[in-house]
Length: 135
Image (spheres, rainbow, N blue to C red):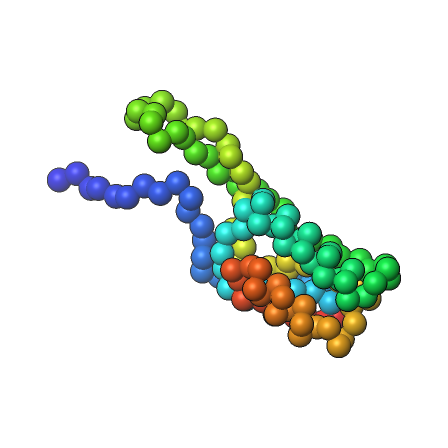
């Protein structure tokens, strides 16, 4: 009897987390506690909103924000009308599967009175649970 199995295109290793992920650039960081996939458009909108929030709260002060996610997967899509057997399709965006324990952002000169507010702001924008990491 022939063994059958389901083939999936985007297989991610969900179990296991990055245990040793230390701050290298800044004094504060945001770490993912859950796992999810982030696309290029979502990541850019999060970075833009975060810069705008910092500028509104702290004015013209120079704050350093480092985004530490490298998008390494290409997502492809084919037309709905195309027949089967015509290839994989064109790349429409890039993505990254973020596992728990991954550092997303690092900040320098981050005021402590705005920590909770900025974490809640990012929590509403991202589909991940976040935790603040201090150097």
